[in-house]
Image 1: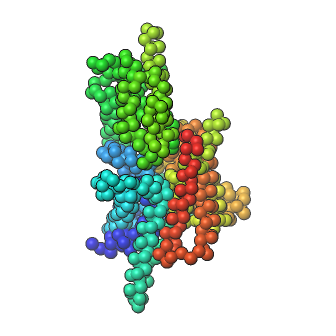
Image 2: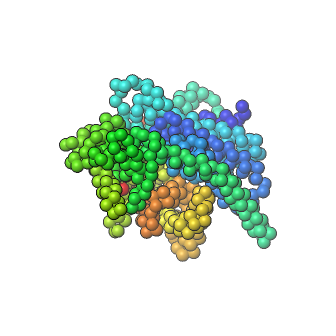
Image 3: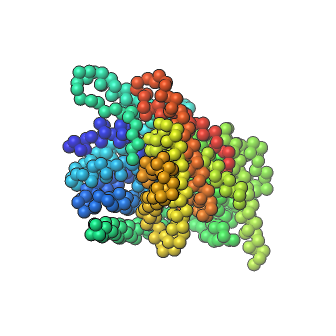
Length: 215
Length: 179
Length: 194
């Protein structure tokens, strides 16, 4: 375990702290299992993209780095798409359009630009893995919450029993925004109370609600 | 200056060419499996709707039909995609050609509202079409029970089945007469 | 024909709004919606790039990728087209209309990674539209994006003055507002059958 790996899990969590890669986060999380699948597909692309871009960081001239990154990322996503269609056809069908859209997930381009282009492949690998897993657990959590309220199940297992009247809204588009908003608010409340307890500590606590353009 | 532009072009070309090669390689490795998956999905849907493993395929007037002989008579299966509440509803329907009745309806894909229109997939809804005569009125809330709160989805499915079944039966009859 | 095009326009702008029901373009939706004025500029710039790149990717798909059996290069080709269209639009604007370029300039580079643009190009090939339908679909999607963005910006300008609980300040309240907007847009479902 090293610090490049750890930071993506909580402190710089891409979803709840940095709020990037929002499109797949909101779109595919109607069930926990979709969150896991989307998260793992993104992690695979992110780790490979980070390692490749980091290994090529001295070869690629600064002026053409963006088109180069785009080609590398788009190729990796195409490969992921083909592999999923061949070996996991059911989950590939559920995620549909959002697999190719991993290309424009700001998380991947963001890590390429902010980390992989400046660090050696080994740290880039850990950075990608940590960020990817941070992204995966966040998506899984949102998926689980929406599935729990929207269908009364988590990972397909009944939680509330058969008499539960599902809150359909949780599965509809507004439910995605509202669930995400409430989870970020809880995150923020936890950080705020933590900050209050560390009243005299000088270390600033990162602001989970900070909005960045993220691209 | 000139040198650096040459380098840009060179680097981009190398990256693009290696990406093309990598994608070509992965495409050749996975293409067969992807096609097999698609075929398996189609076959599974047909087998489910016909309730029988052996069937033959033909294309009549651009429409793909799956036929099978059973003790109950000749069956034909086909797909149709009526417009539902929030997009096309993809159905597979089988019809008994001799009795002119619907045999089974399977919902393949849809984008209806979860908990409301999405209940078209539930068996109580699709099963009410089983054994229904094609000359029945197929009117929701009369001879077809609608899903509460999802009349549009229910009507779309009901009408889609009737219209496409009538068309397919007419196509097959025309084919027989023409021979 | 005209009726069909109108249905595509209404459906892509309202019923299946790219942001509020398809979840495409969420990053700029949350990131560039502090002020109505910038939101509208971002919306127009995106609409422009969307329309141009939908037409170009449609042409490439039809006359280059499909005939040569190179469908597996689709994603790479599409994203490169989008990136170069963004560059082209920026250069052309800088030459022809400096005023417009000043107001849209800073947003243009962000559009490359706006998933609504790539999503649109992919949806066009998925739906099998012809070139006119593709262009209309792109305009509708762009208008819908502009509408959602400026609505959210209008609400956020008011929210500046609201007394929001500490934990909800910033992103959470914006997300919940977006949820309510999306709920309002649910009213459009069933308006036109696709």
